[in-house]
Image (cartoon, rainbow, N blue to C red; front, side, top):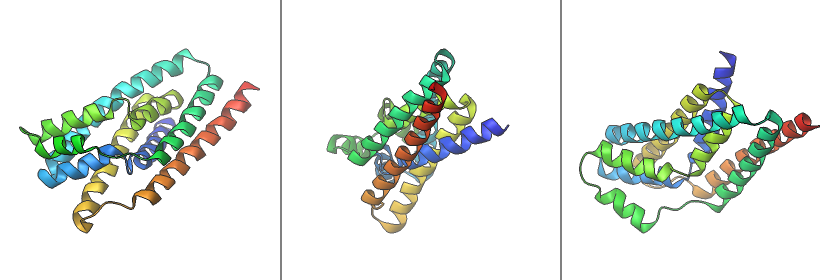
Length: 195
């Protein structure tokens, strides 16, 4: 049970912070201006659960196939790259914003489909793959899914309460710092393991 709780906690924290300021969080805010909050959150949750289930499957498979020292080294490099990617920032293009605002049909299907496509190859998906190489698949899947939904729910709540976006620069720097800290930690683990 301890391994599950560690996987749950680490995955929740990493994905929650990685999602802050991400384009899918901006999509959540946009969808929430058009649809009711509950269907938006249901669509986000379903899409996130599916994408992260695929992610942990890939990550767990890699974890079984590769020696742990090399996995830690690859994960360290990945987290340092995620830190740089986060510093670069993420913007919602006009085309993506238009799709979010003009989606027709069921809100849950519109939101779920948009989020599923937006998350494929996104840094949170890649971070989930990386985390699954280090921790158990179920705790990583559950933690990453809850972390992403919580971050998107926070964006919706704050956006509705304050009528403006979260302070993007501070969030971006904080998320990048967290990725760098995890990257350095994994790099030290890898060097210890490989020597």
